[in-house]
Image (cartoon, rainbow, N blue to C red; front, side, top):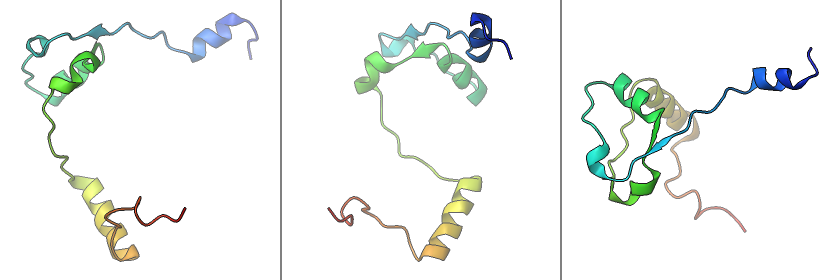
Length: 87
């Protein structure tokens, strides 16, 4: 294995600089999930997070199957895990 600085550079990809979105109008209308993913690889909405709409999460596919099987084996998932912890 190399011991010089080039060995460290091989392991770490260079990080691209993000473009910070400053208004909702800068977010385009996307036609596919692939377009969304590609856009968010180069853009950050951290400056306008409080302006974005909150949507409920949906569970489907493999994750739904895993959750269902876990509920069957453990009885049911706790609704408020923080409330049932002992101090």
